[in-house]
Image 1 (cartoon, rainbow, N blue to C red):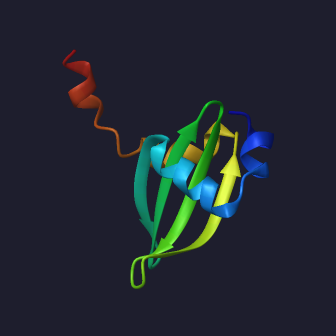
Image 2: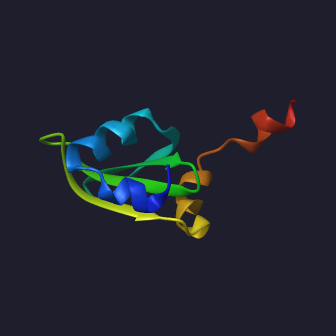
Length: 82
């Protein structure tokens, strides 16, 4: 799926596809939980309010520098054991 195809989907279709995509990471920012997933060559980040489990904001991007906060969670020691 391409980014333009994703953008043409309904909001519900986008959300369903998001939950099926490759999980990149999850992090907290202020009072929100941010979840990032990857589809093909782009990323989707949902900002969720944990108090009511509703999403507040969605960001769709290709810039890999925006996934750096998620990469900080990867434990390099575990990876070097392989």
